[in-house]
Length: 79
Image (cartoon, rainbow, N blue to C red; front, side):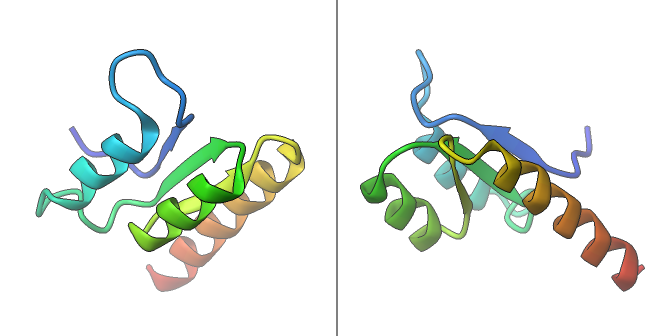
């Protein structure tokens, strides 16, 4: 299956969001897939960004909407 975007929390019961991001980055088919980790905490922000993901803090839900909108607008410009 093809996906346009992954949005995940970091605090998940089986696989943490950062682990999911790293797994996505390690696969050729999904290495460029935009991944947003919607969570809280400065330490996770740095880890997500170092792993090539996009961090959105849960304390600012509007930022998630804005980020997704920007991603799809820029994707439409490049096609």
